[in-house]
Image 1 (tube, rainbow, N blue to C red):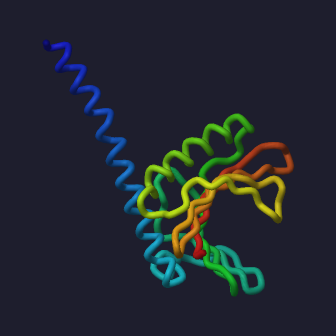
Image 2 (cartoon, helix red, strand yellow):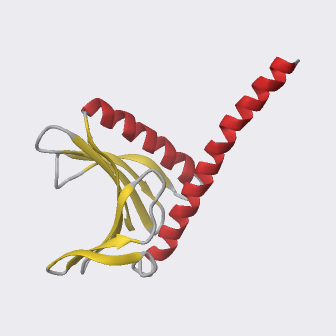
Length: 160
């Protein structure tokens, strides 16, 4: 009986952090989504780089499981970008892409009308991934092939 109780306790303690992490990530995404209508004025931090009409700002928030969170501002687009992994092998990129596809599908189900549609860039044959769409928002998890044969993966959130 003690063994059964111990096993149940261990199993429940493993499941609770996963649910908490999911709620935290969902809450963070909702902050990004709500600030998208205001061109990320709340999340926009210090200017990192400027080239012509394009500006790259640091973000005031970091999404769970990401790094280098930035906001791209140009005359035609505002996008929230976050690095997920770099550099990784093709096999590593497959593993990370699958994990993030599952994470986003679980988080966005019910809020987004189009889930995990395969994405292939028209402009760059070395970029693929998954696209999620609602009426107003597009979320992309993208894998990019570098010149050295390694891969990097990022998350992009932008208006539709």
